[in-house]
Length: 264
Image 1 (cartoon, rainbow, N blue to C red):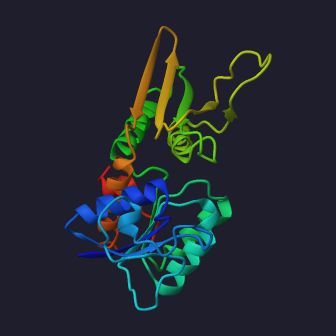
Image 2 (image 1 turned 135 degrees about the horizontal axis):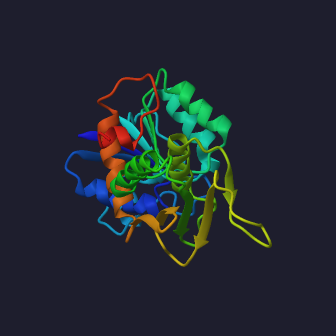
């Protein structure tokens, strides 16, 4: 069984991960970590997720006696330094599923990946990553087709970063294929005609929407739309657990991602 630790274990995604992990015969939950300010510290992680007790309390630190095979972080970018220091000092493979990192923090992960196993993806959803691959194919095919690219994403009202990390990843993949280096975030006022060589992002925040992304390629006379929607957070949890199983079978050297997990 894969001995797995979770950071952000009391959050919405954390509870979903705990529930999915407990139901997975190949996963053993060995630690459920949270910020020191979390009011649920000391509560059994299973009970906190609406399950029977699993004998693993929510703690602010990883006990020295616990040696995880992998740690999954689905918390907040504010906890990056804590998670990074823990995994670096104890050489714990890291599945990093949190968005909103700075360029400097991304660089730290890339450097650490030379000696420690790290997988990072802005979305752990298999369907999202497949749609990313389809977007790459479309961008490559439409590079010379006079196509305008717009990306619209929608998430719940509590999401703190905009555009989403997933939307930015869509944009980066498409931009590389089409040779675009100009980006716009929304529009307001008399902005004039749309420049052809840019990608525009639009962020919507509504209720408890777990996430949806639409990528538009607009050409004269026709539009190609690729849309992927999440109906719950379950797909993210399932993808993260599969990523953990994949990661521990690899060797250090680079940051892995969900394209690797899905063989895309």
